[in-house]
Figure 1 (cartoon, rainbow, N blue to C red):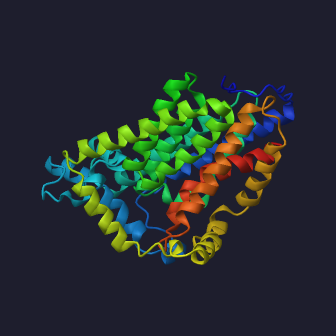
Figure 2: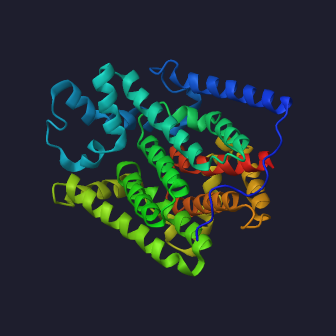
Length: 362
């Protein structure tokens, strides 16, 4: 049997002081939400200039297809099929909806990104919500909405915002669906969509899903794992053939461009180079600058959670195991590449925020 979604521990007693703190936190959350929508046409701050031009060029390249359809009634008037996957990305689809409602502009393109980002956070918070520990969800929300990386990149229609949205939905399905088979099928399908309509490293979520399934089911974990993997594979193949018009050539062309423009995977040339790449990953992507206190707090939160007994606190342990596996696997996968844009680290800040909140809550 799969463990329940709530810990069996008794809820903490509420006091007027705790209620005041909660209301103050909610007011702060409202402010942090509101400022996301202020001056959406603004250029990036000069402090981010050394990250390169990608934040100016890439977002509006991803929404170009949606712009063409909104203005001229055709997604691809020049029949340039090399970047078909961008036409069908979640960011592109969301931008088309917003363009249809508010016209084509930089503001509406950025608004589509903000909405995807915030809904992704909302679904993730829903996934981790436990009625016995509501304060944990509020603390996580404060970490997520107060993060400078989140604030900066949420205001541009980057593929990472589509990924974040689907990652949130995936976590919600995995932690809240009760029927084991439906849970495995839906989770696997959502992981495929996160990877193919967001960023390819959405497939990394298979790692924490498998680890948690093993922890939950032990020897009976083979079936739900195989169902999840099969669902991911079937949806991936079906999506690729559907979008590619029965051909995978556009995706091979795209992968060739990626290989050309992202330099090399020097970390995979030898064990020494990989170790060096992994150890320098944190500093070269400026993770400490963006996450600061989240990193040591997340480590402490994970250590605290490991002291729990699975039978007494299944929800907390399951979430913590999922989060720490997510963080480690993402770093292992992204470290070998020479190309390490800061926006890739958005894949880390959801699990980091949860574990840091776990530390503060305890």
